[in-house]
Length: 409
Image 1 (cartoon, helix red, strand yellow):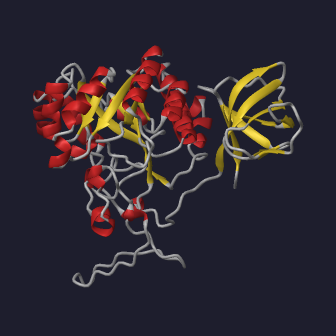
Image 2 (cartoon, helix red, strand yellow; image 1 turned 120 degrees about the horizontal axis):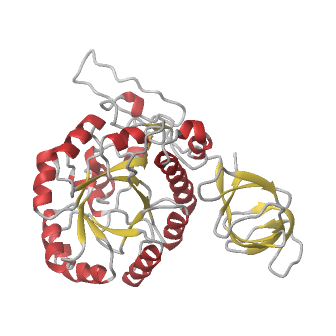
Image 3 (cartoon, one colour; image 1 turned 90 degrees about the vertical axis):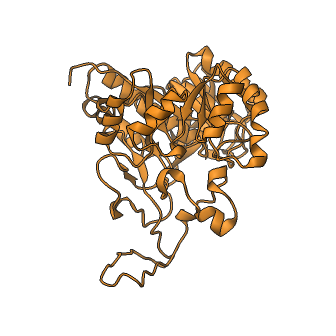
């Protein structure tokens, strides 16, 4: 290919400050994060109000944006707490609020009038008429329902004013329920998905019997551990970015606020690298075949393309149940000089072990850990302690902030 195209925003998740730093380091145009309340992910540590302010300063310093999730479906006792929360986060300078409730939207316009409004995928926007109505109510961006095809997305884009953006998921976990509206967790565990506390029962093992539809057989692959009929594969659109761009998508969203820093680093780097290649009018497959393989080096389920090219089918069910994981985060580079690396340990690694690193926009490369030493320069056989600072010799320059990983399978 040779024609240059308009490149959409790359939007990465930040479950904590370390993940935010990683997303910015590896080239995210924007990050989305949650406060300590009103967000759809209660499992991550999330951000206090002062931390939100710090995150905004970090992002704005490098020209990136921060979007705050405020996308639960609040109950009466929560609504009365919203005005104060909205005023506080607005004063932090967040660039947009991600909202799924119309009452919250009306309060945001009143208590955070200078902050843009993005409509969450939780609202389930599947047609242009709903998108137009939400735009009239003040939304500047619509995060479309995940259940749409590329053709439907293109039509919505065509019907919307140019100043109303659309955002779509490009990578990460898929929910078995339409736009994440699920009652399984609340019914089975008392933890409400729409209040940010999903227990993910769709990932559990079940036996399914349908006795009132004779002649209709649902094939179930079962092993000694059971079956995972409701368990969806993960989404991966790294090979189809041009199709998303052609459909008019303004922002490509990576799922994963509950995932670790290593995941954020690898996925952000892969999609950033691919988008930068497309911006030059070049082919990703021909120029950087390593990018696709990078996404197999994170913890993931088997990949699929979601709903973009077809209606849901059994091809999207991940019968294996668990994650595929061959690599894990070993350390983060703090400094490098005079053929010596100083790193901060994240998982145990050993003297003489082969590690691999990846820097923004570059293919990964490997090296052998040599002459491993603790912070006092005493030789050690391994780095076993979390956040332990260690030195080792390395004749390949390592960039400050780069991730080091080790193969575990």
